[in-house]
Image (cartoon, rainbow, N blue to C red; front, side, top):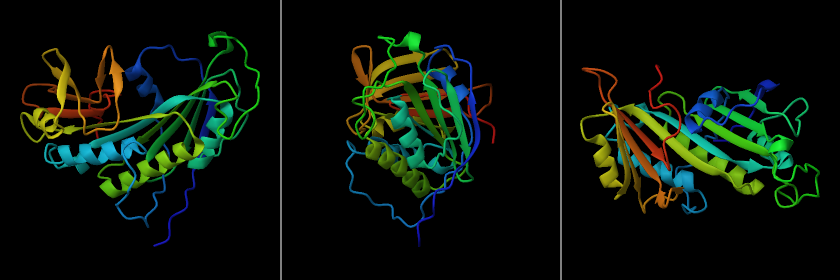
Length: 284
């Protein structure tokens, strides 16, 4: 079967007021938007790339396997969100956007925050570009000094970039896997230093679901939190490619279980390397 072309139609490109630095959760709530992702349908499910080359692809496969029996209705019934972020030059941001099919219209300023949202029908995606104010730069010098192929080494990074992908309801595992690989291929082709992560949430199949996922991951507990409504444990697993520093500890798996009220089904939330976004599930 021939590969479908990727055609995205921009529906909004606008300057926004600067967002205060209020933490990861607040930022993600601002970032959610819509885009259509036309997924290639002619590729099979096998790949030979190592976790080091495609960390999120590898971690997605692992988390799906560990959680499939722990979500009521299986992993396919859960809500999957994927995120990539980093700091890039304006030239590199434009090249990356073009590689994904985002045709940026209008003038992109070097000194003003901009949200760029495009729309497609299979996946919800948002490409968010936040330009760093000249006053926030260490040197205050925004003058280009020449660029290499990626626009990163010779030109000072000016933009914080975030790409979010929200899988549609009951999306096929292979469709999600293919979409993740396409993004990671675009990142690798552009030579961008973007970090990837995923969060999946859904109704737990039963008590102790989080502990069983941690056991399947052979994870070692590093941090714990419990407020009586939500318990959250952070781990490190050698089976995952992603990792971040939390204080002096290296972590790459966070599992939370929450109950919103008496008689409610407990919710299971899994994040790699950490949970991002609102813990509460979205109404379908």
